[in-house]
Image (cartoon, rainbow, N blue to C red; front, side):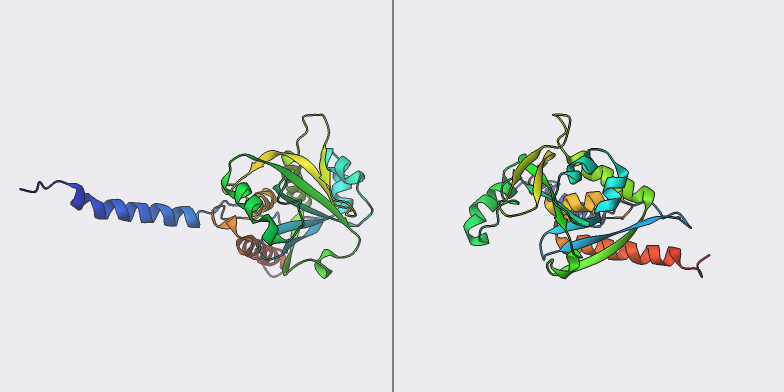
Length: 236
């Protein structure tokens, strides 16, 4: 005779709990700080999306004025009023050979834990939106928000030797890739990193969904719209 037990009865509630937990994880939002009313000084940055990867474009003058290790790293770059900032796997991110030739290395970067990573700093003389990728958005930060955003980028740098250290450079390319103290894997991808940097600057983000670049751009546009409303003279 087949023995009955509590398992079938429990299956429904357990499944419902699992679905609820997944839904909560996907919609979990990491809040950002509110923009102070009447903030006297702002810094406008750009968030750039090439369809799968996001970079930041930051005014060079704002980084230099802030000082610190990040400013020292920027001082050694070629001329350019903008600095493109990105992060990724130390090998896959730097390599610009055809993507079809890099698929095995891409699988390694995704699936192997604790891969070394780099912070890219790339000077641009012209407005980066004119030459970069598929999509872009602007974000207006107070001075304090910008300082926190820059500090989060700076915290990624490997300063174990006392100063930012160039891990690699591409021939004929002004971009420099600085050793990072963070590691790359499917649990911490380039868009996760960008979302974390933006969150330090006050942008609310959904960390789990930030695996894709479109989610990062959604977060930026939502935050900028809210900040425009906060800056509106008609708002109480």
